[in-house]
Length: 300
Ligand SMILES: [Zn+2]
Image 1 (cartoon, rainbow, N blue to C red):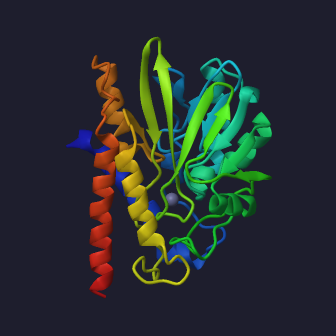
Image 2: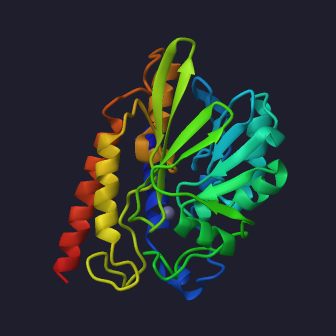
């Protein structure tokens, strides 16, 4: 039984982040985070495939994509994760100063919280979807966020450049494509790019969170603050279905079973991270969760 405990704890941690407690609602600006210490647990950086590396913590994603002309970093995890992310970049033999562009999945404290410090340490430009850019420049979400009122604030990011759905963001030879996959937040963004290892090239996807989680009182099916929430989810699921997706990565690694897959790779299955059906399966599971949520709201 004991060997199952870490997975149980991990699932509960994700759940508690997504399930506001009464105590959290009482203090919307500086909210205690029961899962943060666990999310911030140390993690050895490692090569995912080709020029793509995991530099996040054990509980939160941060992805480094490298080139001789500069690197791209996706997500900054928590404010307190930034020193570990910088140390991981160095441990892999890269220089933080060579990070030229920082991107984001969605503008919550557990994925954008470390970006202000990472921006200072690297001098990189930061780019985000228009909604996320506004939120990151404030370090606080707004009423159109389903979790508004139960989210921690975080250090504001200076000068975030907005981009449009489908834009390709480039650093030297690197080209990462932005796919708007909202619903969890109005500005959620999934990233796709290609990495090569010698002659073999794979399509990597860092797919944003797809959970219909909200503060008490917010209804995805009828609200005036974010009326396109359901439509945004549906559009995002369709985008995920259509993506070429050999390796799926997610801001919460447990959401795509990263550690189990990595253990299998370390145990001698070289392609354990590769599954061309992974994005469709991720979208299918999210569709089902959304349907359950909608049914629950309609029963109210
Ligand atoms: Zn979130």
